[in-house]
Length: 172
Picture (cartoon, rainbow, N blue to C red):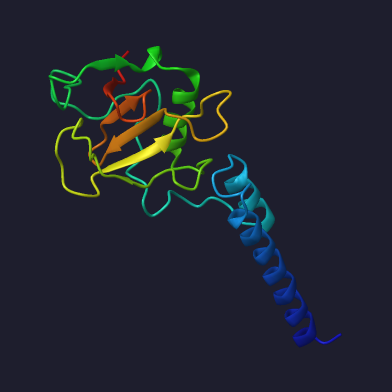
């Protein structure tokens, strides 16, 4: 077999693998299935090289805080309730860890722009906020829990699908 034939065979195999992965992701089981992203990357031989283009700047790792004024953490909106990072469910901490690492995320819609249509977060320009799924045990879909991040590093928690938000205080 000549090197040209081997190259053609390799390209054909790669196309088949990509087609199979695309078919899976487009099926009813694939698009929002938590294993879809990992399966797609493994099947295609890809590695995570960084955050998705739509992902916000990574958050500080757990136990650290973003640079803040001399007084420490300052809420973006004093009228908005806050919650200590350590008081969040374990799945929310897992999501915050994925955000800090830039992914890979379990759902294809993780990292999409959050439009703030409910106007429960401080008003910002379109594209400022991004949302990430917090796995809900026992839920057959993405569930209602999310972490929403702002472009300057702030993080918000909602357990009721945007009905209410709490700003996450990483100091505690």
